[in-house]
Length: 137
Image 1 (cartoon, rainbow, N blue to C red):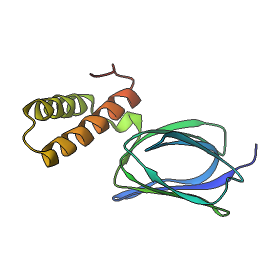
Image 2 (cartoon, one colour):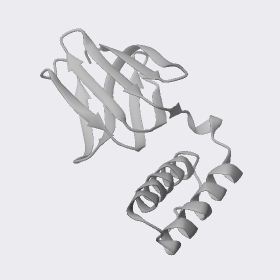
Image 3 (tube, rainbow, N blue to C red):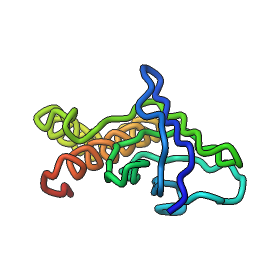
């Protein structure tokens, strides 16, 4: 299988930089798969679980926040606010975030609060799923 260059940059660090065989990212239209030779484009990344097979054939997962993905002849560049590996996730913190978001959604203060609560819930659900924890409602 042909490899391509993959760079995943979070606001606070370089999450991954190296060769990649295949990549699946979360987008507004669902999961999007990328392999070597993909046509050039720019795609909006949404909160969710991404997975890729590195140049050595090892499968890796990442919880991504919102951002952007640029695909071109030189490879793939993903720039997001945050990127986490499953082993970096604090389950207790993710569970608390989910509970806080659920409470905020129940209170329905205003549209802005609801939007933030939904984003917080999506991130918490992705983090819990990536860490192998139960799904949340």
